[in-house]
Figure (tube, rainbow, N blue to C red):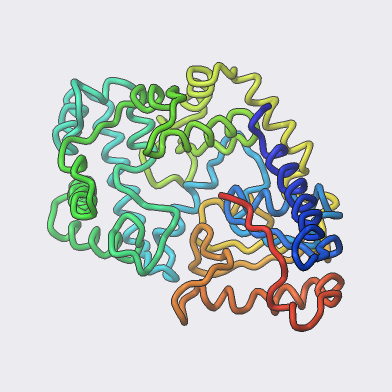
Length: 390
């Protein structure tokens, strides 16, 4: 059996049929055969939620697809384009100065990479592990091409560290910039600060040098035995990138990427698919084309009664549905929200998550009265839902 999104969707439909049949065997019997089911999901599972309604409308009456990347692209430049705009977005306390410092600092880094002396200087500044790691182009792509500092897609103004809070990141970076002579040195100070945050958060390994070996990353992806860390997850996810989705995050020359451009390119990802999974560039291109042909991308052909919530600072929103393709589809764009922050979930009273959750039942009733009004009044706030696994 091949691990694919289509298999997961078939499993969801089979699960719905199984639960409906099991209800008749319950004591007392519960007839769920005509129950209205709604799928919910965020990110990858958000795409599955939308596709479940699209492919199995007889099983699922509606869907909420938060942060759902349903368009497959080979070169996903849009990810870092949104990262750039987020760093300057006032809705999350980003500033143009913050973006400028990060962009200029990475440009300075790129200039130093052009000389032997510059590479050795960077290795010392950033305390990089190994012997001359910046002599390997792939190491540069996997490090500076994603940013030498951490700017997470899950921005949260309640997060206590700079790696997941743009307000803290930009505030600290501004202070570091005032205390040093260059944008690059401000990045060095922020990177050191973030590693100290990691140590304080329980990761003692962050106290040592920074390992940027791309080959070590690829070797860890080749391990197929079970691990307690995240290696198995990334092996499975990147396998699906090579076999279905594409969506390879790059930092190309000419893009708006705020990091060091020209090293994190498509060759980096084509070589990864080939080395780790023995999937060639031609196969990857064909796989992504077939995915868009099968689902239809953001045109979402045949799809009805789906809500697509997306956040302003979510780098994945450019692959989702932002403009309804027909009158039976609705979109929500939340200013300042990050990846999956628009997914209904119970958060602290008064929080963005709580307010979104409280409004979704009413919102679904307004958009999809054709199915909602068939549900008895006392069940309308507790519609049977399937939360597709992330």
